[in-house]
Each structure stands twice: as C-alpha cells, then as structure tokens.
Length: 261
Image 1 (cartoon, helix red, strand yellow):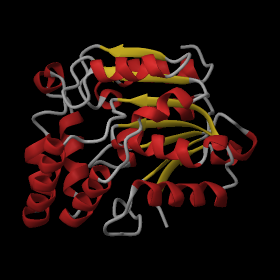
Image 2 (image 1 turned 90 degrees about the vertical axis):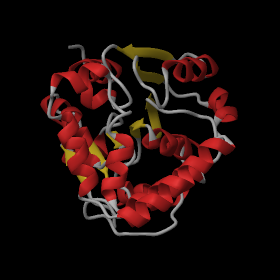
Image 3 (image 1 turned 30 degrees about the horizontal axis):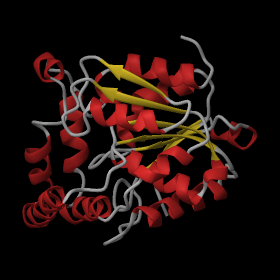
Image 4 (image 1 turned 90 degrees about the horizontal axis):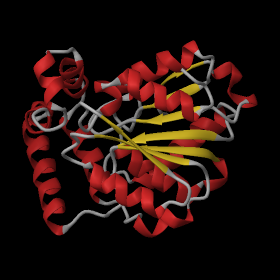
C-alpha cells in the first residue's frame, strides 16, 4: 500500500478535476503542502502519494516507474477516482510520462514541472550509479550533501527560508536503501521524447528560471513538441519551483484548473 496526503477526496469521484501530485526525488508528498493548502481552499479534490519506502508506503527494492504507476492506479481505483489532472515535478514528471503511456484515458490534463523527457546519457547514468553506491554506504546525509547545494535558486539560499530545512528533513527521514531504490527507478526509465507529439490532453510546462538540473531550455524543447501546450517560467526558482515560489506556482495551477486568482 501507498501512503498519501489528500484534501476533499469525498468530492473526487464526481470530479474530473481531481489533482494527482507526484513528488520529486528524493522527497515526499510533504513537498506539495503549499499546493494542497491552495487546492483545499478552493474545494478541489487532490491526492499526493509517496513512493515506495517513503512515509508509510510499503518498502520495495529495485522498483520501476511503471510498477509505481500501477500502484498509484490501484490506489485511485480503490478511492473510485477515474480521471485526474496529473502534476509531476522532476521524478514525478518521469512518472507522469509513464502514466500517459499506460493510462492516457485517465488523464484530464498534465502539468509537467522541472523535468525532462530525455533518457540519461552514459555520463549521467554513471553519476547516478555512483550516487546509488554512495547513498547505500553512507545513508541519507549523502543525498543531502550532494543535492542541497544545487537544487535551489540563489535567492532561496540567500533568504534563509525554511524551504532548505524542509528539504533536508524530508530526506533525513528516509533510509539509504529507499533513496537508492528511487534513484534506480529514475536511472532505468525509458526515453519519452517520441511520446511528446502524441500527448493530446491539455498540457502546461512549468520551470524555474534557475533550474540547474532540468533547465528552461529542456522545458522549451518539450513544449515545442507537444501540440497546443504552453510554458511558464518562474523567476527566482530553481529545481523545486513549487516549494520556492509557491504563490506563483499556485496561481498557474489554479488558472489551469479554471480558478482565477
């Protein structure tokens, strides 16, 4: 079973605007707290599941993105949710591509954030393998040390906001094996570039202007390949744009859902 955070699920079966929020690596559904609060205030049903081993989700080694998507689909079925607006950030974006391949009929629209469609290069794969080995050996602090200096925008670091503390705290609550397994799922993902022109539902892309891991140029390239899609860049945000600039992110989210702010 997967653990999850949710709002207004009692209204979900009757709504095609149920929002499914898929979190980034190596975080949890907690990263979506600003969005869940905004959706709750608007009366919009939403659910944010945790990946295997995170929160109270069952641990699983060597899982794949498709296996996780299947588990989320089973969770939604049990909750009588048949259609979602899917929001995926970073690893959640990779899961969103897998979801579209497997369950396109269950997607009302897509919001793809700070992610990429390309498969990893040999160099990137080697870096991921090194990350996996180091985290298994040294535990979650290794993931914090490697990722904290590169995920946020300069303004986020300079402001001394609680965002960096939340980032660290979420990671430190996980085991090294859980983090390594999630990285393994990312490393084994399929290329999704050829999928982009076949996406027929409404799509928006969101990217922080200072995202070093999946820069705006990648978002622009994807947007050009998805018919009718739009791209929104968020200033003073890095790779975790929803956490760094929640008000701007929430405005885009609610506008996409037909709720003006």
